[in-house]
Length: 472
Image 1 (spheres, rainbow, N blue to C red):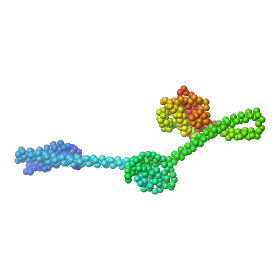
Image 2: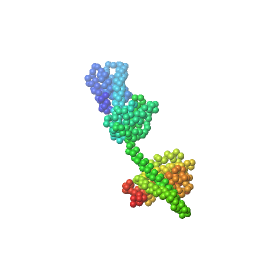
Image 3: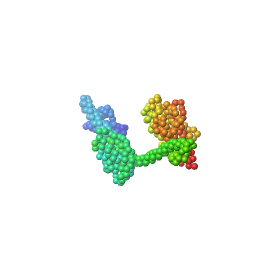
Image 4: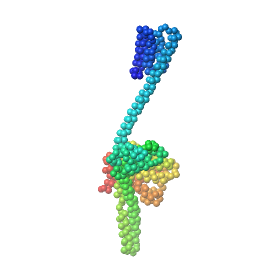
C-alpha cells in the first residue's frame, strides 16, 4: 500500500522492473522448476493504481510471459496453464485493487473528518471568543433551569461573585424559568421580551432579552441574549418627563391666554358700567374689579415663552426613516401611501428631535382623520433648502380645510379633538426657532414648516433668535 504513495509512474516502473528481473532469472539460469508464483507480485503492485480491466490485461501479460519459459508441455497444457495463471493473477490483483480502493475511501473519509473537525474547532473557538467578548450577556440553561453556559458579560451584569454555571436562573431572571415551564408540545420557541433581572445583591435591572427554546425532554435548553437597558429606560423617562412638562406649559399658556382675554372683556364692561351707573363707588363692585385684576395678573405669565426645549442638530435623512417606521403602517392600513424623500446633501436643521417627530406625527394623524373615505390617500413631505433655511412642505390629498381664520387657536370648537393639536405643534416648532404655517392649495391640505439650517458650531450651545432676545 505504501508503494502506491510514490505516484503512478513510480509504481508501474517497479512492477515492470520485477517482471524484467523474473524474465532474466528464468532465461539465464534455465530452472527446472517454474517461477510462475513470483509473477503475482508485479500484478499485485500494479493493481494499486490500475483499473479492473487494466489488471486483467496485466495478469494475462504475466501469465503469457511465464509460459514462455515452460518446456515439455503440450499445447493444451500450455493453454490450461495460461488460463489458470491468468485467473490466479487476476484474482490476486482484484483483491489488492479492492483493498487499495477501500483504503483510499477510508483515507478520504478520514481526511474529510479531520477537516470538519478542524473547521468545527475553529468555529467553536470563534464563537467562544465572540461570546466572551460580547457586551451583551449570553446564557444557556438546561431543562431544570440550571445555567450551563455564561459569558463574562453575564457575570458582570448580574454582579455574581461566584461562577454562574450550575446556579438556578430563577434567582436572576424569572422570565426564563417560566419560559422553560411551557409545554414541550409547543415546539421550538424564538421570541424577545422585556423583563426585570435581579443582581446577586438584590438590585433590579430592566433588561431586553432575545431567547429560544429547543430540544425535548432532558435535552431541552434555553439560549438567551440579555441586554441591560437601564440607561435607555432612564433617558426615555427623562425625555418623556421633559416632554410632558413642556406640553403642560404650552397648555397652561393656552388657558392663561383665554383667561386674559376674558379678563380684558370684564374690565371693558366694568369701565362702561362705571361711567353710566351709580355703582362706581360700591364696595362690592370694587371687590369684583380687584378679583378680575388678580385673575388677570395670575394669567399674565406667558408660560409658552418659558418653555425651553433642548435644540440640537437633527439630520432629516435619519428622521425620515424613523418617521416612516412610526406612521408608514398607518397609511398602508387604509391603502394609502406615505412618501418623504430627502436629498443626501441636505444639511441638518436646528430642532428638537422628539418635538419635530411629534409635530409631524400630529399632522399625519390630522390627515388620517380627514382623508377617510377618499380615493388614493397620500401623505407627502417635500424638503427644500433656501437661504440657510430648510422647509418641509407637508401635504395630503384630503378634502382640505374650509375655515382657516382660527386654525392655530386653542380650544377650537369645530376641532375633532381638543383643539390643541395645531396650537401645540406650532408652539413646539417656534420653541426651537422655526415656523409652522398653513399654506392654501387648490386641492388637499398643506402646512409649511420652516427650520434654520444647523451651523458648523456645536448645536447644543446655539440659541435661537427668540432665545437670544429672551436672554438679553
